[in-house]
Image 1 (spheres, rainbow, N blue to C red):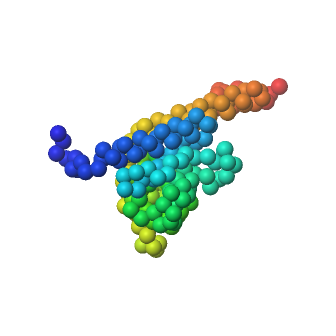
Image 2: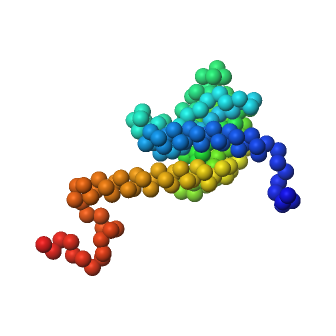
Image 3: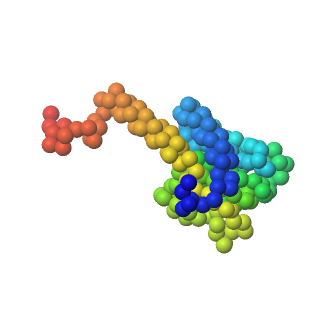
Length: 186
Ligand code: ZN
């Protein structure tokens, strides 16, 4: 046993619920959506589950978190999601973090940190801002590697498909060509 580790309190359940969020992310992956999944838990029960559906719904706001918040509000019959925990595979963006603060869940648990666009401390921290009227506890890095692997696989395949399309159009992919070849000389 590593005595440097913090005491295990609800690590088991965080792992479990993040596993459910990962299942949602995998469903997004299967449907060709950027694979992010979320579940919302109230008193140990999942009251909402969703995955990113921006392409399917042709709606830039259809992030997993937005969809799961709406579901949970319907389930509870209140916009206040007090005593709820949101599990999401990737750090929320500013839009989602803003929505989360409005719904007031007590805690947000996420996997992958996003130093570029994350709004739970990666770039900015809207979930714990004194300027807003609610602050959430945050737990970071839960099952991060699994969620990261799914996203990396998705973008690897997306890049490969884009390259394939470019090849089909006989377009030139500069990254694949040696620098010293003058492709336009003919
Ligand atoms: Zn978002």
